[in-house]
Every structure is written in structure tokens, then in C-alpha cells.
Length: 159
Image (cartoon, rainbow, N blue to C red):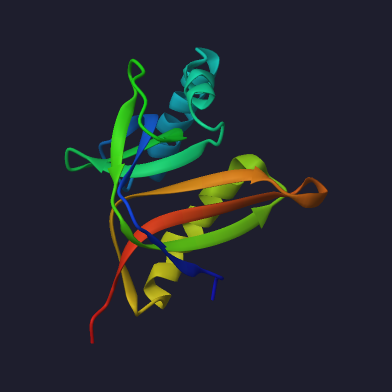
């Protein structure tokens, strides 16, 4: 089983990001292409750099539900007023925290996401994912490797 912990967040918080709405959640290749195109766009037009400069500089890959549809993007912790950016509400409560390491910075967030939704959530029987979103960050670690964590809001399953 993948290593994980449960952390409690005492207050609601916000994240601000640029993203895309995913019309068909099961279109993995199409969604990956849309997400990559958005990342390239906000990198090239410096919108992501502008957002990172307003916050603490830590970038997150964010998955959320907006208007009943899946939304995926890139952003920061906090609420910032930037044209074209979405401000997302993350609720207080228990969060499943899943760490990971890799030599490939660009793939690590997707690797952690794949392990969580590809089996870990089914293995954990005392908590269930309740959303409305999740976020993953990646940062440099030792020896040229990278460390990341995915945070998902969960609720304890009552017996």
C-alpha cells in the first residue's frame, strides 16, 4: 500500500489558478492535451509567473469541480484577483496526504494522482474522498530528485 497520512485543516482556504474544463472525464488523452496546452499558454504569456509572484512561489496542480464539471489547472495557495484566473474554495476538515518522489519533476504530480485514483482510495476503507477538489505540489528534494504531495479532503467512515 502507498504511504499516506491524515492531516486536519482547521479553516477553509482558497486557491487561485488557471485551468480548463474537461467535458468528458474519461477522455484521458484529450484531457491531458488540453491541460498541457493550458500550462504552455499560461507559461508563455507569463500569467503563471505573475500568479506565483503574488503568492509564495509554490505551484500546485489543482483538480476541482466547477459548475458540475471537472476542472484541471495550475495555481497557488491563496485568493488573488488576476484576469482569467479562478478562485476555488477548499474546505476545512481531514485531508488524505499522499507523498511521492521521482527524478522527473513534470511527471510526479500525475504519478501521485494515478496511484491515488488508480487504487489507493479503494484500499483505504476508514476514509472516503469527499472533495470538492484536490491539489498536488512538487518541489526539489535531495540528489536531483523531486518530492510531491497530493492533498484530498476526506471524511471518516462511520461504523
